[in-house]
Image 1 (tube, rainbow, N blue to C red):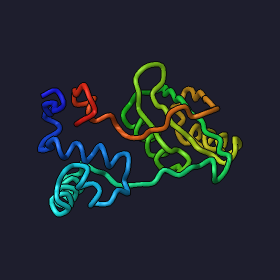
Image 2 (image 1 turned 30 degrees about the vertical axis):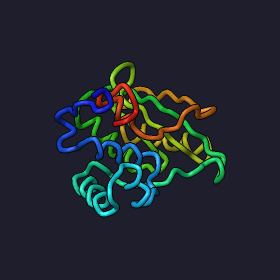
Image 3 (image 1 turned 90 degrees about the vertical axis):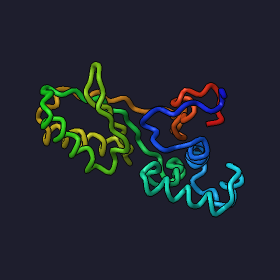
Image 4 (image 1 turned 45 degrees about the horizontal axis):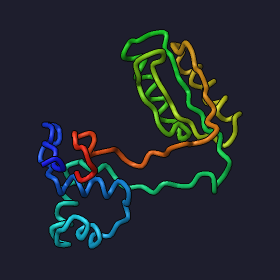
Length: 174
């Protein structure tokens, strides 16, 4: 059937109900077991067992709430593209460790193209962002360039992965 895509080998032992549970949990991590069971047409007990299996097998990495940062403060958010002068694995690993240690670095990616890393920073002030980038340059002398893009407005927030589309479905039922 069109709404039940065949699962790639990486999906392992997931079935259609597991995929529906994952899709629902991405958008509502606080859903009750009873409501989740009803949404996937399972008993509460069977749903709980499946959810526990998904957690135990690492299909779900954790749950978290999305904080409305604008209600807390007026953060300066920056997207930094970082280019390295050396592409030695140890050089990359050194920068990765330093970025990982920064609470203000909220997401980081190793990428291809005109830069080597893209990092999202959320800072209380621009001066703090400048301190962080100065510190990274001091700690990682192989950084050849940091370009900063100040976020003016977030147009779309991450709300979960498009599971059905990633698995080749043409609709949203997976």
